[in-house]
Length: 448
View 1: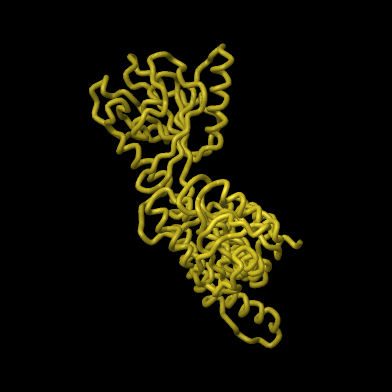
View 2: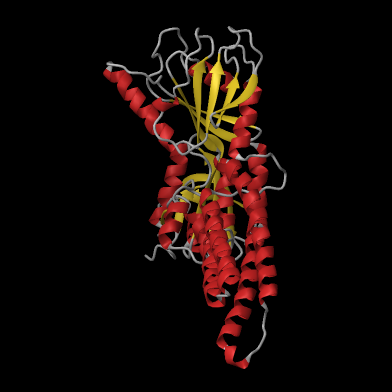
């Protein structure tokens, strides 16, 4: 069977025991499978109560059967939904029966992939389906719904249309240069480029917020032993996720916890205290800590403010990092200080007490500021690949603007506009490689 046109089946509801389980079937065999299992002619888009029969006409289950003829279905193909009882054995028997009738098990995200390939939604909307399912806050849910309804796609489409129109005029002027036809003078082109750049900036701003809402950022909590790293993680999460003792080196492995800050998911990683150690287990913990720092979006480096005399902040113990570093002077309850923020050697230093939960609000405010997050109601869900495509498109646009201003090179500008258009088309999936599609949809849940 052709993997793009054969019939697929999967459980569309979570596995396990429940009141109802929904089995989804999509493909050309769906109608025949429906008639064989129910022994009925199903009315399109009507829920029909029926028994579900096995090969020997024994009853496997009973429930509702709904048939959606293509193209008026989620995937654009014939789709069958069997809504039966939510028991694992019942579900397995029903799926096995569908497989006997010519279907195969669906891969993760294959229903959404078919909806995209059949023009039922663009790639941004398909990804928004997964973002909506995985939303960890109401803000992320609303953001995903806006993308699912086409808000992000519409903005990209407007930009692409503007690029196409500008390219048409440029390329016509290049092709008919001997006719001395003034399709667009340089001032008009520069005005169009300037307007497009402003549109890019506005879309990027919203896309960054959407990406932060859907994917969040990863922050590693680092520092020497006994400076309060685990205490800080526990206070941020509101529960005892990390062991806290007075014994240096208590944390040896990585402790991970996701925390929401104004709807933005933050993936915090508590790490082993960094110091010179002969203990091979502690050495491995330190190695893992440094490896996580290199991959993080931000590092929170903690020090002990109560030491007398004050110890110099040894940022040199960190690996070479290209991410923002927030320095925390912890335990100010022992020095009788009020929480405050200072700047020193290009680093932001926040003085707080993790144990007393004093100054935590300063930390969360600075995390949002460094991440570039502002809670808004008009953001749409976006992913890092979208930000990368927008960045590439803007780069070509700025490069083309420079070519026009400095060299009056309309041919080079036309090529830069073409490259910008291709980069934007990656977002909606108009020109997207099969390899990229495979990576995107493989991250979806099975049955969606």
